Length: 265
Length: 265
Image (cartoon, rainbow over the protein chains, first blue to last red):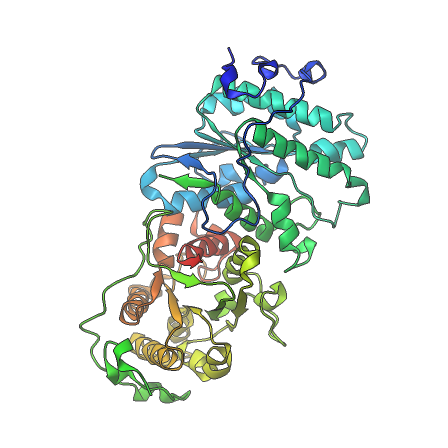
């Protein structure tokens, strides 16, 4: 059962959703949002912000699409190992946590899969999230939800994205009520594969992700605001050659911002 | 004149050193060290540590060799710009500071030059450090001081390194008494060009750098300890292919540790 106290509306309580459920989702208004605890991109480097906490022995899971996947070896994935983490922001953040805090005995997993949209996360959520019982769950999803639509490969809209994302988070909080959520803002840099067709539609996906962070009391990591600031110092393709997949410099920046949303205690 | 109160021994006061001065340096004992404020690699991610402080409008300079240079464009170097910073740890750290703290109007410089040993820093110190008047000065130097010796290209010893480094820091504190020093530990990973000939001699260079941090009240960034921990999670060549020059993952890790030695206020 869903503990409705965790949610803005118990209408979102759908703990056993299936792959094809997205057209069936509740369409309740998200008016009356929970207090906003989303971070601001321009918040101080060491200012007090809402943070997720990893205690000694804590477990963290990175979830998402190719940006999170970053070429990880998916056969027999092991926690805390580079090959199972790929070479993206998730590995940079994870390795920095592990190396900074060797006495904390953290267990860090990556289960991002290239090409995923929200409903594909849902299709593998039991095994690739709930069974891992993360104390902190970071999700970065949304670029394929719009991109595959622009390519004519997918008929989902921003409403599909928001509804699917909401259902996934309701399901997660139902199964793992103590898990702290970190929702990363999907982002696009104006270069490579990212053209004018993306806008202003993409901004709605970003807003939906932020709304999900608000509704589900998640920490929000404002990657788009971060990259909007970053392009003042180097061109967009320095941070992400195709506008979507970060370079090591884009990934390092993401890891830095993500880690400022997490405290180890 | 040198304000000897800043130094353990006024014998180190040599404000106007020249390129060839290294054989002339004082050889005073470094016994009676200032209290150790060096950081520990295993200190907590958010624990209280000695940190250098960058205030609004602050200036920081990254100095060193090829690891700091990282392919920067040296013609007409501009602060805060990627092309003038290259693609190494210095740029990762600088960009993370700039983008996290857009309201602080920081001015960040990179003046690392590939192949440099300490005496070569000294040879260009007036223009490439003192004239820039940094509030925070980060120095990473030492790999070439041993490497070029192993290659038969240089006759300096660890004593040369320590004496030269000491003189450079005395000179810096004399000209810029308010500048906060950050001394980065030279490091080597056991792969690529780093073979058994490096050890145990290289450990003495590391110890000398740490001693310099202690003597000159610098914040110490323990990169070797960091990489020693890092190789538990990925092989040495993941962090630095030739054992000396960090990969983007090694650079990102360095930026992370360096930034934990700096606070913005």
